[in-house]
Each structure stands twice: as structure tokens, then as C-alpha cells.
Length: 194
Image 1 (tube, rainbow, N blue to C red):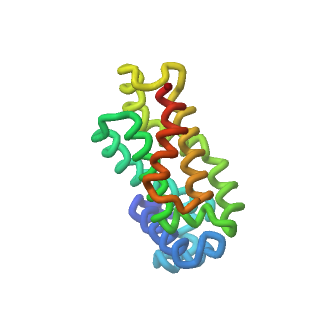
Image 2 (image 1 turned 90 degrees about the horizontal axis):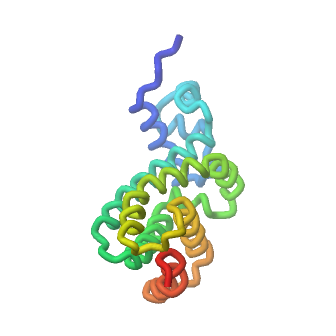
């Protein structure tokens, strides 16, 4: 019976996958590339990551998302105003994805098919992770009547995901202040009310 995979081996494989996705692109990276970059055999990679490439793609996205959510959580703690938290959190999310080659590549046409299949299968997991980070801030704002009382965190997070995705995909090359004004005018009132 082969030895159990350690967490450090799994992290080493995920690190290698992230490096390969950045170097070759998601669509062109093979498990063999990842094994070579990790300095492991292909069999070890398959034993450690039983879902193969799809699991690795998702693992890279979730790890990067977790890092971003940790930073977002700190920002939300500092923001005094709900509109500022919505606007600046959205701006941070857009900047994060644009600045993360691994995550940004999932939005390009060559990877769209793969990403769609992988993330669609785990959409609930991703949504729940984001909701878990945002829920304490959301609940406090609702108790303080700074949000519409009839909205829920899951729907709000999904709505913001859709806004963030559209800002990334449909980059209109606006100055940041124009994007902030757009968010304050059209997005903030949907969440906070008039």
C-alpha cells in the first residue's frame, strides 16, 4: 500500500501547477508538466490529486481566492461605510483578478471551456467560501440597518460576483474614479437601498 500523501506534497504540487499555468497557460499545461515542475513522478501527482488536472485548476483558484478573501476581510474590518466597503471591495477584486495571471487566465478564451466545467462543478463551494468570509460583515450591517432588510448574503455575493466578472471581461478602460462612480450610482443602491 503506498504511503499517504502529505499536505506538504499536495502544496508542492499545487505550487507547481500554479507555476505551469502561468508559464504555459491553463489549456496547454499537462499533468506531466506539473509533475516535472514539482520534481515528482506522474504517479505521485495522480495519487495526491485524484481529480487530475481539473482538481488542480480548482485548487489553484481556491487557494488564490482564499488569499484574496483574507485581504478583503481585513479591508472590510477597516471600512466604516457600507458603500465604501462595496465599492472598494469590488475595485480590489477586479484588481486582484487582473493582477493574478493564474486566475486571469481562466477568463481568456483558450481556458474558458476548461474553467467553465471546473468552476461550474464547484460553484456552490466557491460561493459558500465567499459567503463565509463576508457573512459576519453582512450580518452586522443588516443589524445596524445599513443594508436592505430583504436581501441575503448568498444573493448579494452572487450579484457582486456578476458585477466583478463583467468589469473584468468588459474592460472599458475607464479611470478608476469613473468605475467607482458607476458602482456608487448603480450597484450600491441595490444592496443598501435608496
